[in-house]
Image (cartoon, rainbow, N blue to C red):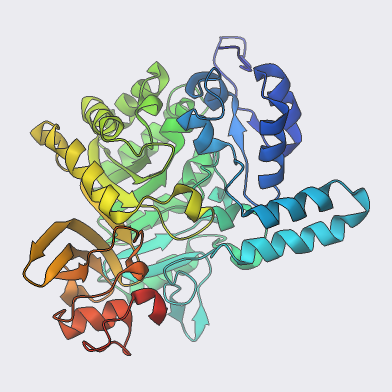
Length: 454
């Protein structure tokens, strides 16, 4: 593979981001066909596009374009938008005099892509003293999500990302907190919160000094026992932990958090086993673990990227070999280019169990397929059949209502269903679960699809 690497005097890679303005440069260096380049350009009017030299040189197989899974993961593709929208964008972007019209069309398309799924804006934003708190979500009793404003970008963007709305420059779509003061006040009033998940974007895009300003104050809150950091950085920029100028300072910060008696959980996003193959990624994981932090790994099942049982098994085995904990295989959320990436639940169950069966015991910590939906995290445990028909066997792994956690229920089997809202509940579903999932209008006689209630 050719390289776009930049090195400093001692040979360490320096970070450089590439976006739509550098697309022609990438195309020239890697020989992207004109039609592929143009497809990326059109889709990136709507979907965020950002990549860096490490991803370009270490993770993408440029001999397999556009089918390479890592290319699919980071470059917007033809087919992510409906054909009529692609045609409209092509016409508007070809005419320099229609910039206003292009912006209007882009906003219209984004509005149809469900930018905040599962009630994130309507149900998750906490209120204090009659005012919504910026940059926070509180969906589950014990966990608050915190979005520091300086961490609302990433080293590279995943094309499937359910938080794509964070990256498109629309303040109305973005979660961002200027600092931790209001978070601390909220935690003081909610001592039942034991976990704070610092997320984004990617908090690890911040310099260590800035990250410290958000994390260190949490150590003064006795009720907070676990700090989680959601990040893709180990896959997309492992130098953050090895050769960045403040990498050692970052690891010292991790050590201080652990020394305070807190659990520090690095929630690492690995979508494909290739992300764990480069030596810098393995070294980054070793350095993180040396601080006492625990690395948990999660990713959705993504069509064209990892929807293969052998690939999933390799991914979870590689995570275990690196000393990390396989944690969640999510179902792709109904947002963004959802139709391009979704995998039907029936197929997801088959893939998960086929991969799970060949794992060593220590890797069977992974759970899936899991839908992070409006009522909570719903796992599809399998498919079963009785004299009444065929059913998906489901369970609430997590819930807005803690009383529902762990409760099983069923839905009618549908080979095309790809999300909770596509399903019909079993008429025998307990009323509390049915109301949480399908809404108060649910009745056993109606046996509605959940989407009809949303």
